[in-house]
Length: 174
Image (cartoon, rainbow, N blue to C red):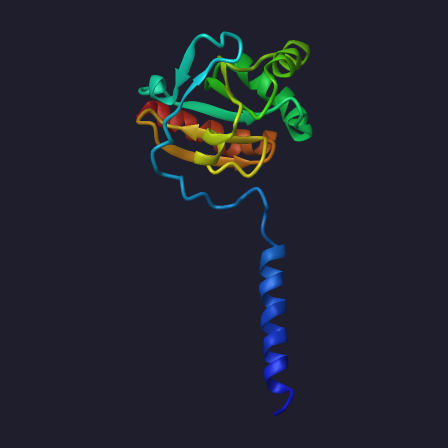
């Protein structure tokens, strides 16, 4: 009897850890799924005197990709974004997060620019509104401005082909 309580607690802890370790860290549930994308109005990366906001995308299905030149995983994901942009399947807009403007522009110049345009979130406030854990993150936003999907970490060809593109196609047809 004396060992029953510690044994039950130990078994519970092992079960809890087993469940947690079996989950995909890229599938963190977001409280923003099926909710309106937070509004923003930020300076464009290439034309800082011009602003861009999520409201301008009303009526369109689009991807918002959070990236930075200092982000190693962003470099891993970037060729896939460049390839996707060439297909014109869904427009990609960039949210350049806590980055130096010059570094970001050089990075895009060197690696290719998959974005219709990028905005600069220098202080990271918009990323906080979107619940960004770290770059890269990608959001699929529908015609009414509602977030329908969130990918934490780099996009993979599998996620793109099996989830994002079919969902984007369905949302575009509505």
